[in-house]
Image (cartoon, helix red, strand yellow):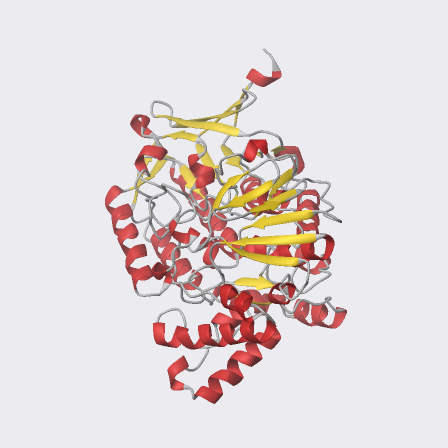
Amino acid sequence: MSEHTMRTELDAVVVGAGFAGLYTLHKLRGLGFRVKALEAGKGVGGTWFWNRYPGARCDVESLEYSYSFSEDLQQEWNWPERFSAQPDILRYANHVADRLDLRRDILTERRVISAIFDEATDRWTVTTAGGEVFEAPFCIMATGNLSLPRVPDFPGLKTFRGDWYHSGLWPEEGVDFTGRRVGVIGTGSSGIQMIPVIAEQADHLFVFQRTANFSVPGVNRVMTPEVEDTHKARYAHWRDEAKRTPFGIAGHPPPPLTALEDTAEGRTDVYERKWGTGGNISFLYAYKDLLTNKEANDTACDFVREKIRSIVRDPAVARLLMPNDHPIGTKRLCLDNGYYETFNRENVTLVDVRSDPIVEITERGVRTGTKEYALDAIAFATGFDAMTGALLDIDIRGAGGLQLSEKWAHGPRTYLGLMTAGLPNFFMITGPGSPSVKTNMIASIEQHVDWIADCLAHLRREGIARIDAEAAAEDDWVEHVNQVADTTLYPLANSWYVGANIPGKPRVFMPYVAGLDKYRAICDAVAAERYRGFKLAGI
């Protein structure tokens, strides 16, 4: 039998070796489970392995965007900047894999194509594109929320004679845009990060914007030993505080006022201070009602629009860069380093493709309804099929042959974002219906992995072979997730939170936005009540 047709028997299969997969592997090995992580990429790191585009950087501060489960790991790793760049985060992921000796159980360049449940044996059969087969009672999806890149289906892309790239599939060796005419399509988070960097290299940069997005300054800086040492001396305190916050991030005390309780002058002072210190969580935490009260939110919108007007010298360009179709924070609030200032450069042109849409990609470049733009290279910053894309890219079948793609045809349905009814012993880390992308992702990952590991340990102790979400509990949870979203301003935006960036994708608000602190308490209560809402079947 060749290597590619081997069947490997395990206790659990983990799909993905990003931060979720690495911690799951470590945690389950600690319980004595035989476990392997299957990773499509050539290395570990997940999102941070693939997203190598210029300017790629985390919008959560480095000292928070890191694992909390190991004090040694926290103390020994040194972050070079306040907000870490992609290469540093990838180095950290590799350090973790080496430090915890995880590589011996990680199989890279193994793209999973199917996961099928056998009711007779209560086992999952997971198959890779290379034909390898892995069997285990438990299948754990650590596939990430932003991991299936979306390249728009523009007519003519194959005829383009230049080079094109996607932010989520960037070449490992990097790209030099020096002296080239470059087009960036998309002005979401990745576009806003890459545009200032590419503008410094390119002979001319054309930014094709359909929808303006809000962005606030990162105010990034070199990490000083004083800042790092002071934080590390009280790491346990900060981690404990983070667990009691909605975003899973410490250092931002809850605001005492609503926006409308403050005076106009007071609001301006608060927003100026937040703008000057940097950070998107900090800005949205200026007042306690910015994401629930439209009138309050308008005060923040107006402040940022005025900032754009004051930074961008051309009034017409400034107007195009001012968002006017969604409340601030209801799409991911971007964090930038000199984004708006970039449009003052002579070699940067903003193209409004809302009023003049892109018609096709030609051999020479991009053609809108009225003009063709000659380009040597195109960078697509068009995002991902978020939260469900990576799962639905795999043929997943549960009890009775239930296909996940059919079950989720009208939008994802989960219980706690951890399981979906009809797929026994199948767990999702930061799945739809959990706080995930509305938090510090590593904090959410650790909470989910700890919960799943505790659950598997409980099943083993009790001699339970199968766990599945109850359909009624799932229905109640989906309703609850929607009810919570409807108390906020989030549904007012056409965001990737509702799948609006993917043609034909059902419009369902996917994250749970009551806060990671409240969610953690719910999950703990469910486990304490002997896994309320789950069906458990003995051996």
